[in-house]
Every structure is written in C-alpha cells, then in structure tokens.
Length: 64
Image (cartoon, rainbow, N blue to C red; front, side, top):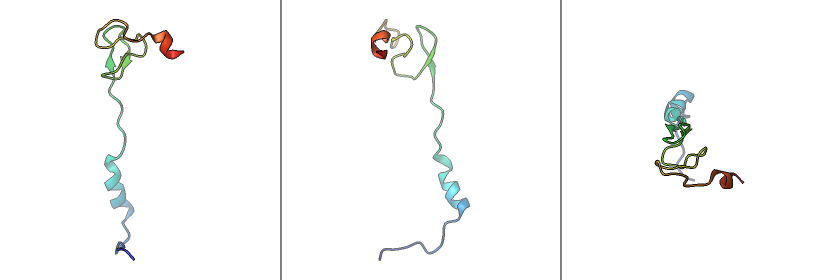
C-alpha cells in the first residue's frame, strides 16, 4: 500500500488552494477597421481583417 494522508484536508485549506484556479475574462481589443471588439492576434470575425490589412479572410465564405 502506498502512502496515505495522515489527516483530512479541511474545506478552508482546500478552497484557499483553489482560489487561483478561476478563469479570467478574455481581453478584447477594438478592430482597427470596423471598431468591433475581437480577440487580440486573431482575424476579426465581423470584417475579416488582420493587423490593418484589408480582407484577409472572406467573411461570407468562412461562415458557410
């Protein structure tokens, strides 16, 4: 048999350990072309531009 804990870990100690496990809200940046919020370092889902370049992805074809 392997090693076992000597005492039960209390709920408070367990919850304090898990205090940093929550997910944070994603950072959103304003698109330079259309001004709608999108995730950073990704193609804008509404207009299809990336880093100010015009129409990297055709939005109509990407949805279909």
